[in-house]
Structures are given as structure tokens and as C-alpha cells.
Amino acid sequence: IATRMLLTACLVLPFAACKKQDEAPAEPAEVALVAPTTTEDGPWKEYLSKVVDANMGTITNTPYVYYLPAETDPECEAKYGRQLEQAKGAVARGVTSGNLIAFGSPESAKMADIAVASFTGVPADTMKKIKIVFIGEAADSERVKAAVAPTGADYVFVEAK
Image (cartoon, rainbow, N blue to C red; front, top):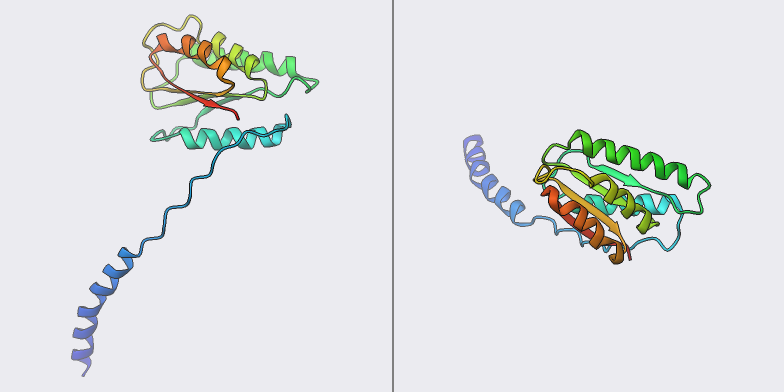
């Protein structure tokens, strides 16, 4: 009897395992990314984090994310200077292939200024296999794209709407 039970178990288990594989859970629905209607840091940082995650693709390195608060922040100008210095420094030192650099802010034009200044003077074709994501207004995208294009990096624009 014990032998028959073991034989039956050996025959039934593979079919049970196959059935479980067929019943894979459904993919989660893609969530639309909507920019905050407020200029508060918390919602904007959360939004930018989601946009960066959605654009990572096969990149496994920690992304470089540059954020500038709204001009209503009393330290906006000081933070602008620090972000500009950090972004320019990182790009000048060189970014290894397989990385992502993201720029986003409720102040799209000022963030575009930082992005453009960061890529000014970068030698041609030195940033291949690097993804640059600009999150802002369409009016600012073209000048960021023009600054990034000579570097050979992959440019992605996400309209903050």
C-alpha cells in the first residue's frame, strides 16, 4: 500500500506543479503618472521618483536625480547654485555607461538651465549608453535635447502634466 501511495504521489505532483505555473498572477495595471498641481516638495519628489523608476528600463545602477524646488522656497537660489554645481561636476567627471541622469522640478525653465549648463563643453560621443531624462515642460525640452545630443546620450523627455 505504501509503495502504491508513493507511486501515485510521484505521478500526481508533476501535473499539479504544471497547473500552478499556468495560473500565473496577472500583471499589475500601469499607473498613469500625473504631475502634482502643487509646488510642494513632497509630492514633486514622489512624482519624480515614479517617473525615474518608469524610465529605468534595464539600468540597474542608482540614478543621478537633480531636483530644484519651486521659486517660492526661500532657499531656491542657493539650492539652484548647489544643484548646478553638483550636476556640472558629475557630468565633467564622467558618467559610466549604463547610468541614468534625471532632471526635474516644478520650475521647468530653471531646471532646463541646469541641464543645459551641465552638458556645455562635454566632448562629443562621450556619453553613449547613458540615459538622460528631462521632466518638465515641452517648451524647455528642445534646448535640453540640443545640449545633450552631441554627447551621444539617449535623451528622454517626460512632460510634467
